Image (cartoon, rainbow, N blue to C red; front, top):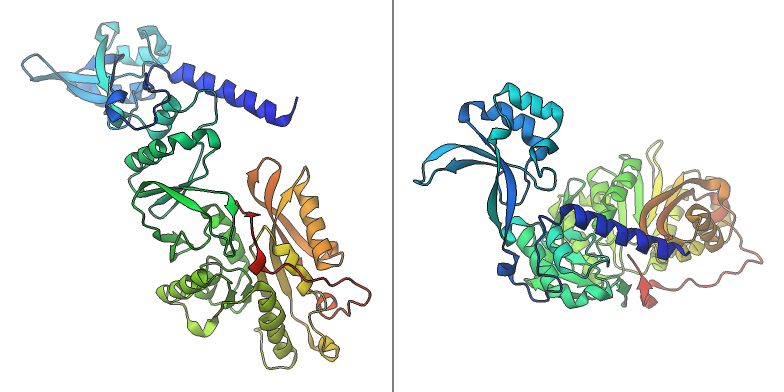
Amino acid sequence: MTLTLIRRILLIFRVKMSSSASGLLLPTGVRGMIDLDREKFSRNITVPILKVSDEKLSKITQICKPYFLKLSNFKPVQSLQDKNGETVTKCIYFDPVKVSKWLDISENARTSLKQQSITEDNYETKEIQLSYDNFKYDEIFKAVLPKNEEVVSGFSQIGHIIHLNLRDHLLDYRSLIGQVLIDKINTCRTVVNKSNIIDNTYRNFSMEVIAGEEDFLVTVKENRCNFQFDFSKVYWNPRLCKEHERILEFLKPGDILFDVFCGVGPFAVPAAKRKSRVFANDLNPESFKWLNHNAKQNKVNMNLFKSFNIDGKDFICNTFRDFILDYCNGMEKLDKGAKIHITMNLPAMAVEFLKNFNGLIKEFELKDKFNCEILVHVYCFAIGEDPYAIAKKMVCENIGKDVTDLISDIFDVRNVSPKKEMMRVTFKLTKEILFSSNEGEENSEPPSKKHCSSVQEE
C-alpha cells in the first residue's frame, strides 16, 4: 500500500470521525453550494440547558464550563425570560455533542452541582436557531465542500491578504471559500488563490483575486520591523518568520551580512537595525524598491546599509569579492571577533550559485592576509527519504568540494510537501575554497537567476 493511499484513507477516516462527532452542530443541506447563500445556513436545533438563579451563577458556571455550547456570536450563559419578557433566571446552554442527558455530566460535576442545590430538575432542553453567523469558517467548509476530500486545511495571511493554494477539486468553490474567509476573519479584506509555479524572473506567483478588494499593498510586522510591499510583485512567505529570527540571532553588532537574494529585507533590515553592517541584493526591481523603502521606514542607519539590484552571481563575484580584496588589503576593517554571514534564501536554486565561491579570489598573494570567519547559510529543497543527507550532498556537489567537515548545521526549516523539506545548510567558507586554483575542476556557469522559469517555490 503506497504512502499516498494510506494518507488518503487516514484523511477520510478523520473526516468521518469528526463529522459524526460534530454533525449535530454543523449546517445541513448546503453540501455542494457554489454561490454563498447565507440564509441556507439557518437551522433549528434542540440543546440541553440548565436553569440557575443569579446568586449561584458564578460557582455553577465554573462547574459547567467544560460542557458549554461554544459557537461564534453565541453566549453560553444567557438570561431566561418569561412570557411577559421579564428576566426570571439564568440559563446555561450545553453542547449537545457532549451532553444529551443528565447522566452525561460527570459524577463529580453532578455532585458539585447538588451541593449548590442544582439537580436534574433544573435540567431540560430548549430549541434555538443557528445562523451563518454562528459557524466558523472551517465548519462551513466542512459542511459545503466535497465529502471525504481534502478541504481548505490551511492558508497564509500577509497583512490584509489571505492567500490559498487550492487543490483542483476546490476550484469551483473558490468564490465561496474567499467570501467566507472575508466574512469570518476580521483582518482580511482580500483573498487570492496562488499557483505554486513561479513562472517569471522575480519569484512572484501568478494569482487570482477570488474575493474582496484588488488591493495588494500590505504592511507586515516581523522582528520589530514593519515591512511594506506590493504582494503581487514580490516574494514573501510568512511561514519563514521563525527562520528569519533564527538567523538574526546569529548576528552580533559589528558582524557583516551579505544577503544574496534579500527580497524586501526580512533578513537585511532587522540585521542593520541590530547594528550589523549589511550588503543586501535582489534582482527584482520591485523588491529592490521596497527593500530601500523598508530600510528608510524602519530608520536604518544608512551608513550600515548598502543595497544592490543585480544578479546573484554578480553580487558574489563583484560586491562580495571586492569586499574580501579590500579586507585583505587593509581597506576594510572588522571588529574584533566579528564574523561575515552570507544568506542565500532562494531554495529552488541557491545551491547552484555556490560554485562562484570556489576559486573566487585569484590574487593568491593575499591568501595569508585572509583571517576572518565567514559563515554561509544556504537554503535548498531536499526531496527524498533523508533530507539531511540530500541537502549536504547538494551543497558539496555544487560548491565543487567536499565541505562536510566545514558544515556546522543542517536544519530542517519546514515541510513543503510529502518528502519535500526546505533545508538550511550552514558551513564555513574558508580561504582554501576562496583561493582555490580550480585546476582540473569543471567550472561551468550556474544558471543565472535571470533565466529562472517554472521553478517550484512553496
